[in-house]
Length: 65
Image (tube, rainbow, N blue to C red; front, top):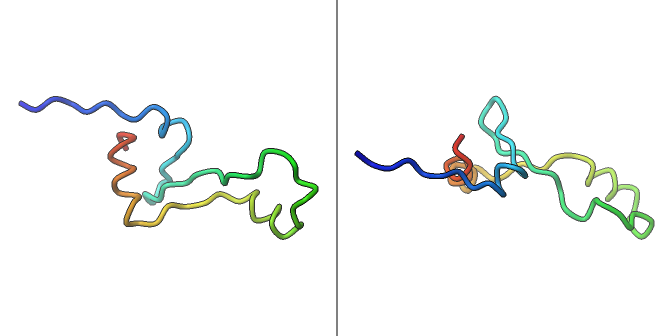
């Protein structure tokens, strides 16, 4: 009988698995100091990012989803 693996707590707090199985995350560089960034860049930073499928499967295993 094998032992259960613990989920990675830091990843669990920062990443979310969608209903279709994609791994969603909040983009970096969007917290403050917005005046030096262009409007296009600020708008892009508001949207969620999605991990590539090749790494998403590893991340899903790490966060226990």
